[in-house]
Image (cartoon, rainbow, N blue to C red; front, side):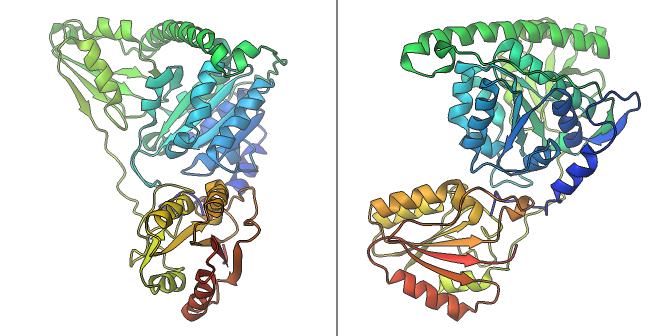
Length: 489
């Protein structure tokens, strides 16, 4: 099972084959192609020279991964990021695709990559599901920018998504930081005409520089000072780039705005507004914005997500009112309650004095609301371990999908065994991350020696058969036990 998804994912591998077998793949073509945002991003990364792509599936990130030629999902987001950084360190332009909740899992290597820098370009594409269309909660990844800075790009259109993705590797190499491309729900709903440009392949040589690439206290002072220098260079580039964009798109400061009117600012794909100034970078062009704010009565900021830009404009505005205008969101989707595991959950609910700790997947919320707790992807075994330590008189159960178990559950089970915790783990094995297209996560469901395991075919199992298997496993009193519940995709 994978991160919760509200809509059935399309088979991305077949679409990737159709798209990248086209004659224009990686070549200049004067005729524009009408593309989705994901196709434009894939084209830009491909034409920018991506060689290594990594991903843990979730909210459209796996679709981009497939269109970039990816076939093997990583075991978790932390590993996906580290593999991409390692490839960039060794000289290959690399990209990692994550959803917003996934960036949280990769936060440690993500932050350290800013201090260590890169060799060949590294692009991080973050799918910010701020409308909670296919995620367990609402997050805005931009707050991560405030920790170490760096360079984030937020395309406002499909052509700009292509152009920024293609340029991102060169920018990453110029400033020696990973470049983040933020993709929002609003951008995902767009289509546009894209002119492909020739591919720009590049392979950097190996650079042996432990003072740069080894994260260690003896290197921290130098790395921190170097990051400050990088951020100053990035800020200078942003000022010039945004000013040039304003001139090229004729979004200059209108005369009536200089006469006490409203300054309108549009961030990324928040929607076109007449006479608005487009913003598409983090950091923001602060010097340019200060000039634009002179003499205006108020500012209105359209952005997708939190009031992240609004607060930064407020800090520049010297008391001028700054309002956030939320763009219209898509309310058409709704999470579908899954009922195919009702026999399993009926058996679980029949256990007296139970606590059921669940995971993220298509089984998270059944109609009777069987789960008592669910924290995040891969956490069910660890949460159940804590519950067992705190409430030993209860029957503690953990339910995980095969992807979530491979993501983090296996290591948590090792700790549960080391602590001698008595709990029963149910792993729903349907052959991959079915909610996102069926990607197979590395790793087999092979618990530690000494863990009692019962394998059961769930497709035809009755509630009584499942209950009998659970009673057998719960009789195991020397540590954790596991029900390997095998079912169809």
